[in-house]
Length: 341
Image 1: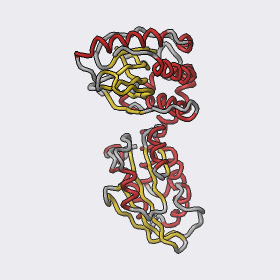
Image 2: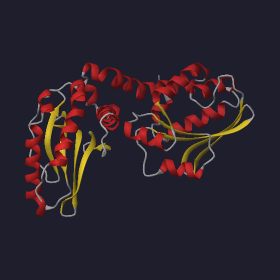
Image 3: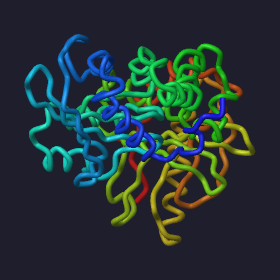
Image 4: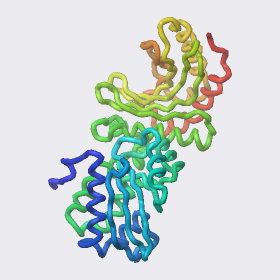
């Protein structure tokens, strides 16, 4: 199918489609308004009376402000829509402050929603809707307009099918080709692995310090990292952190434990001494013996490799079962070791 949405893939696409859809519920799609509203969580019953739908776009920089009448009561819903980007600064809190009387605040994202951003959105009082939930709500009205059919086909191909493969098959089949395909999934599979680790460490192991980040290298290949411990003022007034990072070396995907500090040449020898201590202690940990350890390199001053595991040599399911325990062991020794200063 020559799909109209494949030619407009930026974030405003979601805003435009939803705006068109909500206004269409006033007239040509009027018979399906309450069905869709119910499926997406905007009303309680699929036979509610819904009318007077209007949409404000980019009001106070919020993506959509939906206003309507449900069973004789005025309602309003604020949408923050994303494709692959994530929450920045305090935007969700800012929108709630600008529009304090909304009945619901909704964070809708088509790309994979990692544990960090989902937790953030929920803490700020937003309901979270992903691509699969939007798809399941739209599928009931698929045949009612060609634009709906085009949009469903587009998000199914571009987002839903990839996420289904990541969620349902990647760990089971150790699908390295999927996790290593940056052109198609923008690092979503890499995010999935560290997001699962993040969730386990936060909810089952009670980690005090966890920071999740993702971006891409100069060549475009995605990387994801999860910081698990930090030492403030490790080198004079410069702090240090350790994190798990998923990246690639010579086209081979790995997850590695990294020691990082934004040090200068004057602290080089001390940082390298601490690197060697940490590397020796970590490689001797009991949990490491459950995995095939790769060879670390000594390149770089600020970022130093401590442990490295290549996905080709370690099953994803094994990594996800071992890494939480290994992370706990690493943080315990990181906190109790006497470091060079």
